[in-house]
Amino acid sequence: MKDPREAGMVGRRTDGTLIRRPLSPHLQAYDMMQMTSALSIMHRITGTAWSVGTVLLVWWLLAAAAGPEAFARVQWFLSSILGLLVLFGLTVAAWYHTLAGIRHLAWDAGHGFELAQAYRSGRLVLVGTAVLTVLTWVLVFVVWG
Amino acid sequence: MAVKDSVTQSALRTPLGRVRGLGSARGGTHHWWMQRVTSIALLPLTIWFVFSAVGLAGAGYAETRAFIGAPLNAVLLLALIGLTFHHMAAGLQVVVEDYMRGEFARMATILAIKGMAVLMALASALAVLRIALGS
Image (cartoon, rainbow over all chains, first blue to last red; front, side, top):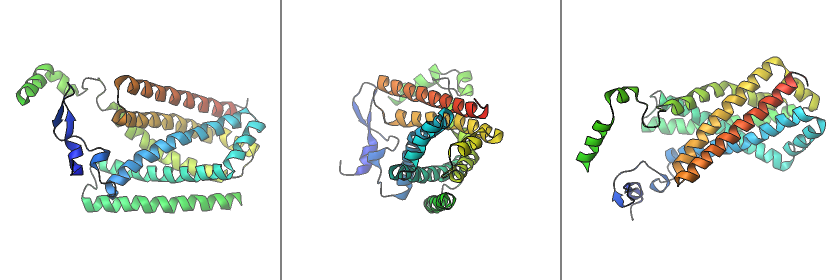
């Protein structure tokens, strides 16, 4: 398979035999250096990361309900270097997934499908994620400080 | 092949079935639509929660409980919890459906994800209610 686009043409019949026909695009068929496809898979990766991060929300709420000792343990973890790194990563994932989600909702409503618009909205999502993440953490250290 | 396909499609789907548009899983676009509905609802809730959490940076036990237990915050937290875990389970289900091979493994993983999501949502909601109702 010399042309990577051929990866999107390898299908199987219901009896399992191979057949050459167009399939929905999947990872091997993509040039991941293209911003459009990279941002698309990033939406799934950040959504999955956020799903894992909800464990922290559950832990935080359960500890606050359980008592001061349990809450102190959560606070110790969240204010440790590892905890802060995890929270920072989650902030990036959350803002990215939120902004890319708005982009998806616009597409669902039928807007912004032109290639130039897709690149522009993609760049907006990336810049927005950076700005909002920095803003969030500046506020964290202002409040905390 | 092409002839056979077209014959099967027109023969096995009744006109009423096509109008209802629910497909073989009887689900139609419900899953897709609920992902959009929850995402729209989560938009303001998540932004509220992120900045509320920022406001609680360094807050102690009593201050945090006062925040969680305040009536408006408790209601918004309960909404956030329900919507977050619904949206999470729906999103993870699609990822599993797209990438996981094997009918049994796929179904088992999806059921495990849904079970975890329900338990996490219930545990979180109970914690908020315990604090809000002051027990």
